[in-house]
Image: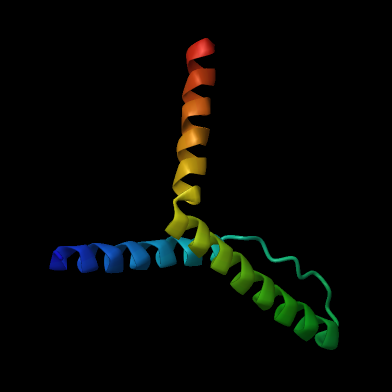
Length: 84
């Protein structure tokens, strides 16, 4: 078994985690109320939602679904560009 395989898996996991974190952080905040009790509840729900979304992005990246979806989107975009 090649030891470089472990390095590749490690760096792939780190890269997937980085993109998952950036994706979760780039989502818009839905908090617009000024009430402090409701604000804390919404922040807790928002944090939970961010963690859940980050987990699924990480799973998608680990399985290759994220890459496939982006490659498919890029190919559709180039096809549309070539038609024009």
